[in-house]
Image (cartoon, rainbow, N blue to C red; front, side, top):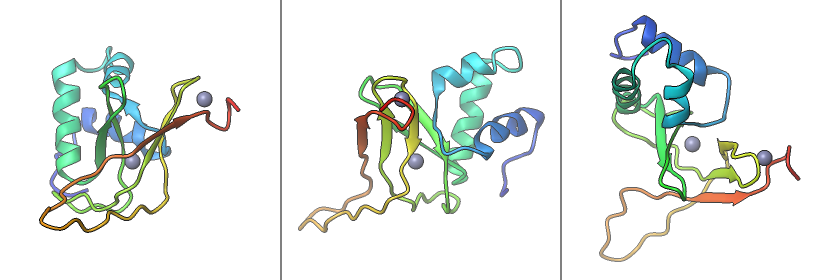
Length: 125
Ligand SMILES: [Zn+2]
Ligand SMILES: [Zn+2]
C-alpha cells in the first residue's frame, strides 16, 4: 500500500472503497464518517490516497468532487483513463471499465481528460 501511513482513519476510508466500483462524493464521505473523523482529516486522507494512485477523483455536472478506487495506477501517476457514469434518478455514480482513446492533437500536450456519462443505471431503467 505504498507510503500511506496506515492509521485507523486511513483503514476506515480504504475499506469503503475496497469492494465497490461505486464512487463516493466528498460530501457523502464526510457525512458517513462524521462520528469518526472531521472534514479536514477526510480530505487530507483522500488527497494522500489520490497522490498514491489508490483512488482518483472527478467532478460531476454540479461541481461535486467524487472519489473512486483506481484499478492499476502507480504512485503519482494515474494511468487508468476511463469514463464515469452518473444516474440522473438515484445519483449512483461509478467507474465504467471501458477503454477510451484520447486522440493525438497537433501542438497540444494532453495531460488529462474527463468524460461523465449520464442517464439511468441498471436499477432505475
Ligand atoms: Zn439509478
Ligand atoms: Zn473511475
